[in-house]
Image (cartoon, rainbow, N blue to C red; front, side, top):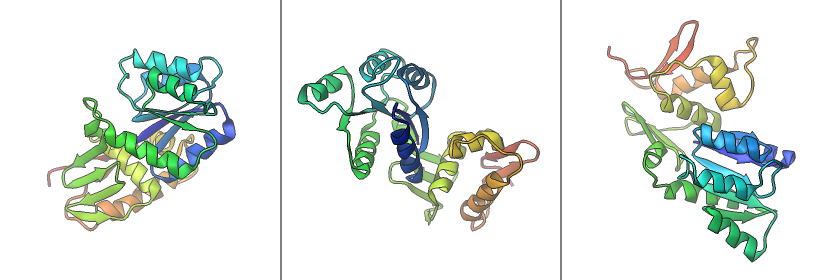
Length: 229
């Protein structure tokens, strides 16, 4: 599950990136409305957390443009210091799906995000909340992974990694892309972080079962797909 955070307060944006990441979400952050609108229209996010007061284009401007775009269905939670009734009404009327005033409790933000994702009913979006490859199943809202009906105990990063691999089933993902998508860092070829993480994930989703799904493609990366034996 991928969330775009458009927030100009760097410390708050970092806090959201860390907190949502620990909950298993893949988080992309930008600090101005122009980049936020570009990423929202060109990317593949499942939800947007949008600040109201942004440089470049303010939150309402981003919201209005998005609702006129092909990504009009994406859930948007406005997170802003403007807490007056008229501000909240304006945001909701402009197309926000929810509105949360700063300062806020992270647990409340998390609960509201989960509600918005459950409510998402736009064509094509509901299906992305449940991923299935062979007998491997991932429920992105309930944060639950199972294989052949057996519950898999995954860490937040393992859940993010598996989510990425299942979304891109059959596609070889390089270590660089995995590092950028899951760890939000540029890949350092001198480390084996990705290989270690894949090995741990493989020990949970493949080793207890007869048919492996996660495969190494030498010199290229990793791919998750069912293969005939």
